[in-house]
Amino acid sequence: MDNYIIIHGSFGSKDGNWFPWLKNELEKDNKDVVVPQMPVGVGNQNFENWSKVLNELKINENTIIIAHSIAPIFVCKYLITNKIKVKKLIFVCGFNNYLGIDKDFDAVNEPMFIENFEDIKEYCNDIICYYSDNDPYVKFEVEKSFADAISNEQHIIKNGEHINAESGYTKFEEILKVLWKEEKLMTLLASWAAIDTHGISSAYIVSDSRISWGNKKYFDFGKKVFASKKYPEIFGYAGDVLFPSIVLSQIIDMIDTDVLFDESMTCSKKNKIVFEKLQYSFSKYPDVYGDNLIQIIHISRDTMVDKYPNFHHYLLTWNRKYGWSKEEKVFPIKSGILNVLGSGKNSKKIIMKDINLA
Image 1 (cartoon, rainbow, N blue to C red):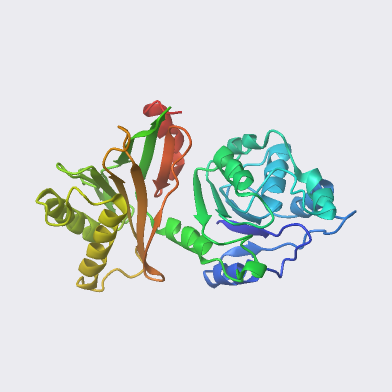
Image 2: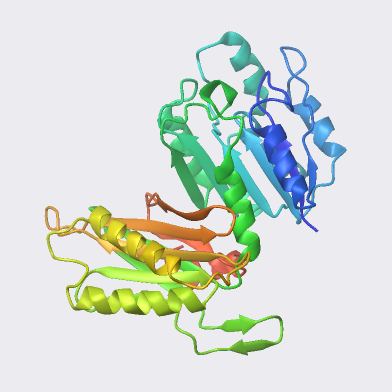
């Protein structure tokens, strides 16, 4: 059974920010959650003292650690030092550099830094990073560099500041959505991009073809990826099968017959039309989904800019608790995975090897 550990930042408290809310939400689903109070203050907060706290906790390959601010780099250093593998890491506003705005913060943060923090990928192959575009304490470039170096998925929160109570975050539902939806997926869907010296040169979606019912019945000839013959649009889905397979086929037909798009449209406009079509179709669909999850990847390309394409990658999600939502994903700085969804997501190293993008 998975267990969860939530770790606060410098001069922080286990009772601060969105930590109590997240603990309560996870415990509603009977999850095993620990939010330890870490030693804080000059003379108390250091790598050794924080390590002593984690030494008393259950940490193994079923552990999911959620860490904020200085805690992400501490977690990296702790797992690397002790050679401990975990299931998932979710880092919020992580960094590995001096802030330079307060001597006390720099004093307590310094023992947590580690030069080879990229080695964390040897101990966890599922690392998600959240950070904002206007953090008043950590420069955007510092947080993005940290995320680029270690994460397989990252999310930029607009105007999120330090994603703490001071910036209005006594709840952080984005994390809960990620944790909730990944338990429900039953397939593999991956997207990746090829990037050269000029930028993004191409983007792809790949999926398995298995449709399953329970643990024993399955069909290995399903279709989960759809491509327009006329426009540079590709789609793939994960999770529940019936609705997306029907509606994506209809959307492709309408795209190819110029019912939905015209050549002057931007990626943003095209995705808006697709998202509205999905919502409308779903509103007419029988209420039979229960707690099942639908996730749809949409990769779109604008007209050529300076002879090079302009790609956009969108993730469209429906679940019972939150309804429909969408987000635009960040492209990596070099060729590699954009998104891996489903129960087969831990196979992404094999995918990277097979497509020679590693």
